[in-house]
Length: 366
Image 1: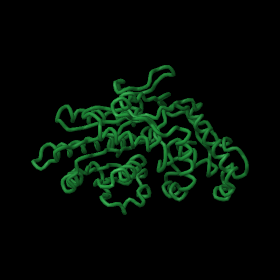
Image 2: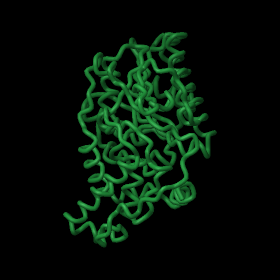
Image 3: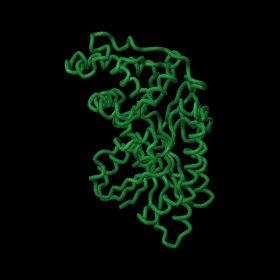
Image 4: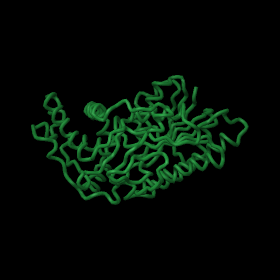
């Protein structure tokens, strides 16, 4: 039985992981630590308080006394570290928060883990610090470049990517210098339930349903490898249970798509759904599809993001050969599940998008 501290567990990927792990390992003890900033929301964890073995703590990963007390009092032996600022656009406009959380916060966690797990007589027999990172640390690929492997040199191009690269190096250093048992996973672009509507897919769905412009950077040709969030959670599970200590594993979706193609696909699917489900027009009267107009009429090309990486792609050969990892969800099926979830959870996405965030969207995507 594991006893886990899950940082950032009220965020998008963290909350999905909490639900996944609780279903898969109901006898484990898991403590969720989250600062509940704009992207971390208790609405993402509705129903979890009824689970045995679950505890939520509102707090910051940089609060070393709090983290130390949780590790000791709960006798936790595993940290799964999701907590991070993760929106590239925000890192361009507000980089300080990314350094504070992603670099200083990760180092704070590592310091406490070292103290509690390596320097105390009552430390657990085994421990693991699993660090969740991103493919953006590797930089940008050209059209014919091979996909990122775990050996690809780091070349981060945004403040977000640079902050995650720094945190990756810190995790590695605490293993090689101090002997902390660590693993790291670098994933491709996630999508799925509970994703905050600042990222491409949920933003396009919400704006399509509310009749707002669908902002596409540049000409929309930028390419990403897309990973359904549940597949990501399963990949992390495999690393935690079977990964080699000190190693990094890439987790990808094996599905590269241009941004404009994804936006057009979302538009087409929403048009079909409105034609098949008459009740959607009444539920979302501001959507063009409610009046029989094509959702694609909302597509608006906007000035490209500063330093916009052109292509990301993950080579997950190592995870496949060592951990037997394969994504189970295709992009087509995963996108369908995501759109259905958003249609069924209007209360969730309206509640997490408060007025201040709407103002920020309009300022930075117009």
